[in-house]
Each structure stands twice: as C-alpha cells, then as structure tokens.
Amino acid sequence: DVKVTQSSRYLVKRTGEKVFLECVQDMDHENMFWYRQDPGLGLRLIYFSYDVKMKEKGDIPEGYSVSREKKERFSLILESASTNQTSMYLCASSKRIDPEQYFGPGTRLTVT
Amino acid sequence: AQSVAQPEDQVNVAEGNPLTVKCTYSVSGNPYLFWYVQYPNRGLQFLLKYITGDNLVKGSYGFEAEFNKSQTSFHLKKPSALVSDSALYFCAVRDVPGGGANNLFFGTGTRLTVIP
Image (cartoon, rainbow over all chains, first blue to last red; front, top):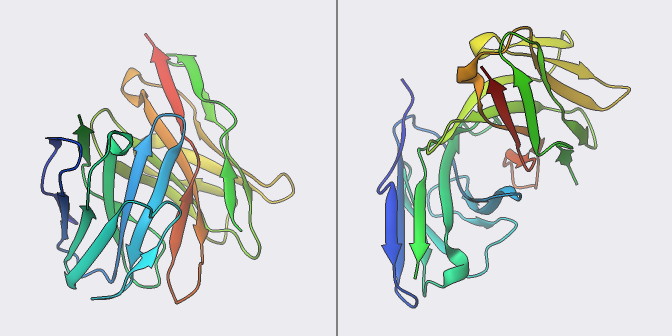
C-alpha cells in the first residue's frame, strides 16, 4: 500500500521560530509537492521537486524554502514563522510522468 | 494556464438521493481531470480520473464522473448518497509548468453534506 507520512499532525509554534515540516514517501516517486490548504482557497502549491536536490517554486513560495537531499524525503522550512502561515500543510508525491498524486495526512500548523 | 472552477462551496443532499458536485475546467491541450475527497482531519484521497476514453469514468466508493468536452465540465455523481459521503471534494486538472513536471491545479473545494 502506498504511503506518504508527515512528521507531525499538529504543531504549535511562536512567531519568529524556524519550523521544519518533514515528508517521507515509500513509493520511490520522483515528484514531491508541498501545498497549503486554507478555507475557501483550496490547495495552493508552495514548492515542488521532480528530482533529488531539484526544487521549483509553486504559486505561493514567499516565506518558505524546501530541501530534498534524498529521493524519499522532502522538507518544508519556514525560516521565520508568522501568524499568516497558520494553515494545514499537505505533502504529496507522484511518479515522474503520472499526474496522479498521493497525499500525506497533513500537518495543522498554528503560529501564535 | 490550466484552471478549474467549483461553483458551489456547499452542497446538501438527502440520504438516498442522487448527488452531483460540479466542476468546470479550462485547459490548453487535452485535459487530464481528477477528483479527490478529504474527510475531516485527513489528507486527500484519490477518487477517479479522466485521461482518455469513455466519457463516463467510474471510481471508488460508487462515485462516477462525466466528462463533457463541449461544456468543459467534469461533474462528480453518485446515484444514492450515504451519510458517510459527507466530506470536502476537490476537482483538479493537470498542469504542465515545464521541466518535465506534472502538477495538479486544484479547485477551491465543495463541501458535501448528506442529511440523514
């Protein structure tokens, strides 16, 4: 069974803290994605990666960075968390030429 | 650029009645279309997809979707709704930003409530 896991289901951080969200997939997928989900806005793509050490900006990359040192792991970094980054963060993965994505359970981040 | 629209934020239907969740799309080229479902506090789960072939696509949990090229629509349907179908539904279209990537562009979601 395919599996995408995220390091935390719930996270509470203070403004200005550095935050790491980890995502691991066990399907040997080339592509990995980070989204944030907000009510009324749907899913918005933050960053994606289609290979190790490769990264591409999505629609809303400001305030975020990513790291992909290994094929199975894709990390989202908030360098200095702000309250407007309070959201649900979803990680996904897919095969190189297949657009169907598999999602993790999500991390609900609250920045106070 | 590719886009999808889900015109209804909320759909209510009585248990046992047929349900429809609407989606329209705008693409250049052939559309690859998807439906995902999200249950409370969970990630998205794949329901079905249209790439080519029959316009009526069957998916998980008794759902189906009809691809209509002339109306640029891909509505999700189920003949008889269950209370357990209550969830958030997302339509998505393939986006090809270049570099060999295959991304998905998601709609804003429709919350389906099935009333017992």
